[in-house]
Length: 145
Image (cartoon, rainbow, N blue to C red):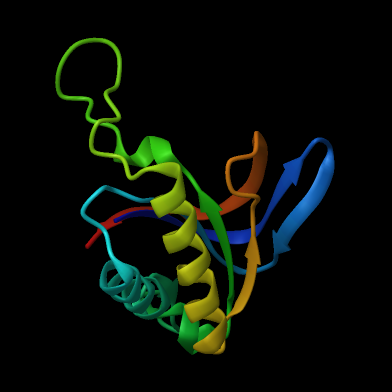
């Protein structure tokens, strides 16, 4: 499971000109599901996302997590994160999970994040989405589990 996280001042996702998910300070998570991923993968990634220390403390050091700052989480499915880009000039998606598997794990991740007490907004699985954000830093990390 791949998670590209960006520390944001705000972020939103639109489908057909309508805002379907929006957050203020927190993390925008672009979530990619691969064939071998399971609910356990989702649990591990959720733990990492919510506890990864990417927010600054009083000394300006990245010592605080999403949980620490009580920030918000915007989860957007992005199957292109599972692309193999090592060969050629066109990405291969042979390692990506099926749409059914990806949607199931996407929904599971969101439900578990809400159970964990996070404020969660989402995109719309499988839709053509436009994502807008103000990356704070910029700070971006690719998390794999």
